[in-house]
Length: 139
Image (cartoon, rainbow, N blue to C red; front, side, top):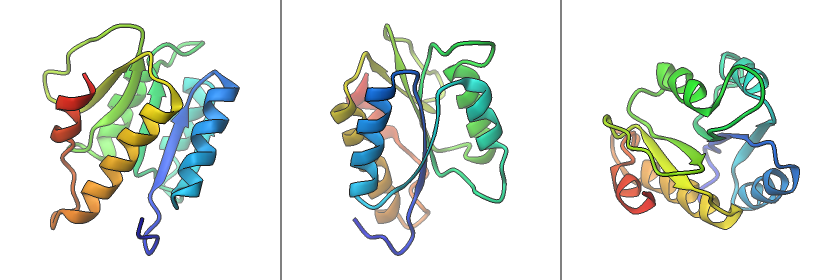
């Protein structure tokens, strides 16, 4: 992976083992990673304009008030055409195609999807804001 511009991925998951494995693998392929285990922590990270987030992976079900769906909405304020990657207990459609929904994924599946999105964005002349290829494969 080209590291001339390291993409920063926000990983939001309550499962520490899952989160740390995914983060370790993402860092190994050259990505910057920020983590949170609650939606409230992730929301503040998304609002930190000094350290922008390029991609979002979050569990749909998070403790407290802010869940993965709300985080996806907040993420889309900065990246309206990039898909957020959400792990959910069951399939759910995204009418706009702006969310890639993974049903109970393991870290390797999430890594594959995120790596594909980052790689595709670097190959596209417009910055690769569209994740439609992965939307079709992930659901």
